[in-house]
Figure 1 (cartoon, rainbow, N blue to C red):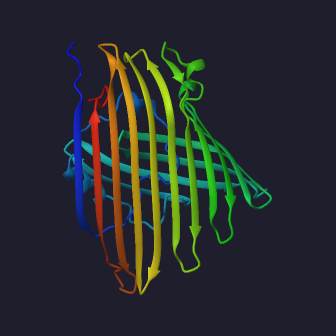
Figure 2: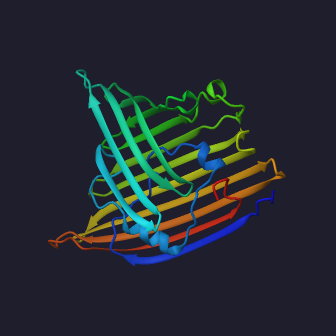
Figure 3: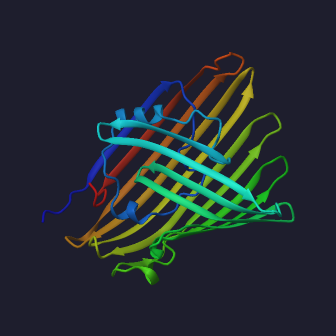
Length: 306
């Protein structure tokens, strides 16, 4: 068997378009995924693809922090469909301090597409604290993700939130094969959300997955991985215009120790993106204009899919 060769992809894009800005999906937990670190994504990227994806942005007023349903889809190549769908709803019990939570997602990031069906419960304590326990459940128990969450409500409608996610929480105990988590993965999600008195709103979110090690004996690879994603969104009204700024950044590092290539092959990804938009709120059509800068730098071995 020929040994896989490391590759490098550098994509840069600056475009001025009519837009509804948004920081991907990173204003909600994005836990570590085994398919992402082992398989990687099964498609190539270029500037044309990013233009297509950005043109299929969400135009609804529902943001990623609100209950409701939203979805968008569009063709990016002859055989690929971009899809971003979410249905999030809170169902209060007779006692409104308790609620059932449902969050269904189908989306895509730089590691490929994903699906989640997260269900759980929320308890309000003292009017200011919210505790939650949720899970992404599967018939294969080894794939179940567990979410522990706490939110502190702030004056003015803001909050501070922390979630600790245990991806594939029962993998070593419940898997039917010989694969093993040598260093268990977990993901920490932190968020600060604050509406300001002048109508401005700021949200800062962090997803951090520290070093984990997965020995996938079915695929013949041991992967050590770590990842950090940061998103900041700020919107305000000024002079009859609605202004919005979105910042996104990602740093991903992996080392693949393949059966056919002893010694390991690294993978590195660095991404930065800035989106600035302005909407004329007094016009009946509310036209919107903006600029987006994206830099994606990837090098190394992308995974078994490619």
